[in-house]
Image 1 (spheres, rainbow, N blue to C red):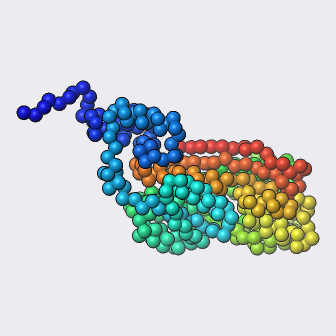
Image 2: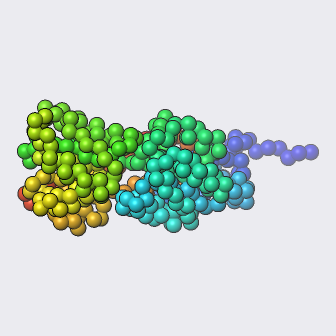
Image 3: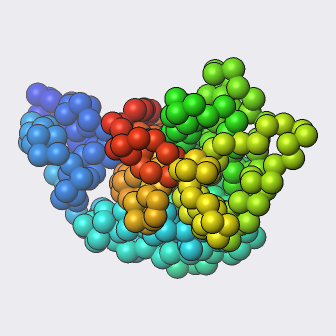
Length: 365
């Protein structure tokens, strides 16, 4: 005769039958956090880890490590696809990704898509063949939204970084481009500039749209024209070539610009070289600002006024987000938007050239 069942607790809460979801509910955390605790991840705060462990003890949860290993069948590798590997910003981003992955025992396959969606597709297919556990994707310009649907069909977790193809139920880590561009535009206006040119960028994607929107919003708020937009490739050479366009502005049409707000630091550094080649100096003959605050920005002469976007931290956040998604494929989507920070140096002609405090921070989930 079968022994009577202990009815003191429901079936789902008897030892060996408790689910991660039940533990998460008891501890007041997400299922992915419980999974990270079970794996001994350092991403979890000590207080949270203790709360989860207390919940497991209270519910009688038993971790079946062998079954978990079979379920996972993971390779401890991820794919990192960037679109401009020659830009020092992406070197910083990659270092941030590696900071987190190394701690967690993961490694990254890195690929440069060179802004070519077809090349991006080939790399993603190859990474799938190598059975990576997920990908961090800085989408190439022209990437279509159905790419994310294809990754879903492959059951390949994906975090979008820096650029957004779709924000409908998708993970994303980036920076508040628009706020940063508004801040640096406001700064130039505060210095007395009324004719400001937006310089750089030939490709249309979410990062360009946000930067341009910030420039436009600030100029219109001050009652100034936002028509001075000069598009060029994001290279130092193209930035240098822009010097002629800015210095030889057709006076018969509109007043010449007195400041150039560049899409990124690479273009800005090139523009300053173009001015120097003509016997002119940024901050004296033309105010110049950049965006990103790559290491070279502080070392240039004159030092470059720019907007710091914390590339390394973006990489860290993107990696943590992907690891959470790998641990919990069904969890709610997350959007992490880091603050921008205006760094005032000599290239804009501002007296003193001292950094300003962080101005914007949004963290959406």
